[in-house]
Image (cartoon, rainbow, N blue to C red):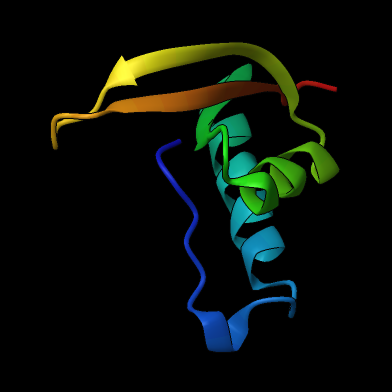
Length: 82
């Protein structure tokens, strides 16, 4: 899964959680067993969102971003067969 982005006027209303649950249900129906997401290491709100929804952190990495800088990423995983 690439990203879930919610416009500021709709944050803290459960929109992101609904979108995530729909994505999980869709992938479960397709037979997907595991979802992987990345968030910026400094994006504490994104990491909390995924952790609150059952994802666990599996690694951290420093990657070369397309705009020429290093980007610290956290990778999280969810087993959707639970």
